[in-house]
Image (tube, rainbow, N blue to C red; front, side, top):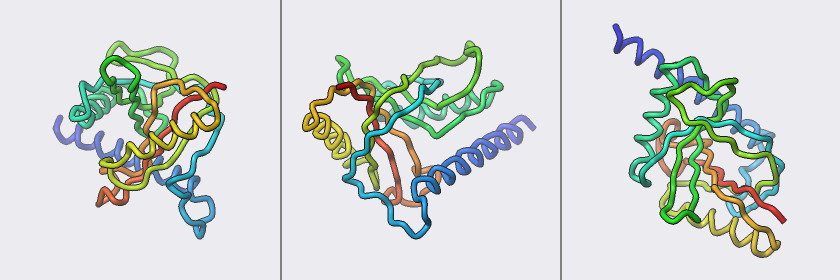
Length: 184
């Protein structure tokens, strides 16, 4: 019975994530007949403050396991995700630091979770279409844009997954937004 309840919670969580991904893709696409934005475009947007719950990932190989731990913890307490999964990456740290995160709305932080906040501000964003093997190109695009426009980037870089292995049959169908805060 416990396994069945756990599976039921997992399926409910996947439904929530799929609905959120569908809503974000509809927003991204706007008019259904409009083509997807170019994957070499950089946009400058104002982002609100975002409250996150986080789980550290030891390295790139541990990212999927860290997401599983985070969602397992969320399923065991009354905190609902309020957005798509994120990966926070700080390449400026002595050793590259990864944190998996989910936006959540709550007044107090449950003891089982680590809380973080992404500050409100101006962010550079770009989209990456396809698998993660060549995602570094999108990071480079943001860095080059900032250099050309005399902007300073404030890490962490943020990967937000519109379509990933949860919803896409092939890595060629993945859509990932990479963003980073900037200051003049």
